[in-house]
Length: 173
Image 1 (tube, rainbow, N blue to C red):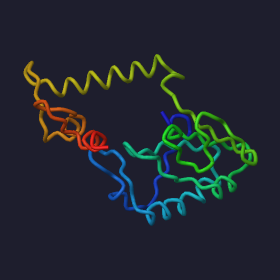
Image 2 (image 1 turned 90 degrees about the horizontal axis):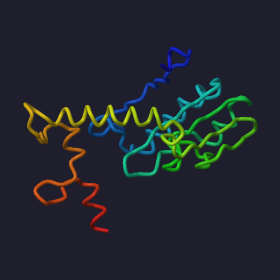
Image 3 (image 1 turned 180 degrees about the horizontal axis):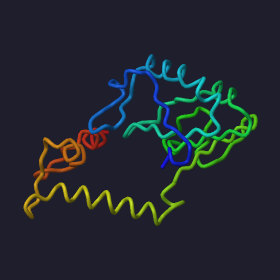
Image 4 (image 1 turned 45 degrees about the vertical axis):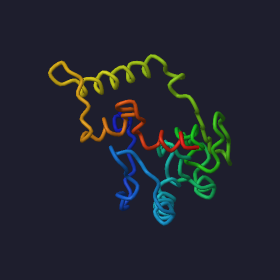
């Protein structure tokens, strides 16, 4: 859909292994990674009319990818949509729940996109749940295969015990 509108995904020459966690989800990388990423993105952002950023790390604050300096390098009339705004945002100038104007560049910080498109959000959620549950059923029986990373990472309790590491960590606090 992105490409059908004439847009393109930006692919940077980075070693992304350290930023990729289980199941393809993002995980925090070191500052050197983010510094290199910002360096490569600076020239791309300066010539972009629209930037959409979505980087979140489960259970953590969103990483800052776009600096104020990068935004000041964008042309007036450009737009940055920070889909990670609810987790603090990927742009240091994002104000969650607001649209801000920085020298003619609009920075949108939506915090509840599913509420903006409830019909489509519900359809997508239903498809995801159906697909997930279909993978748990083998020959008509519930099968909890902990070698499947999606099942393992979404399993909260087993045999009366909390087995999900993030939930265990929260329960200790």
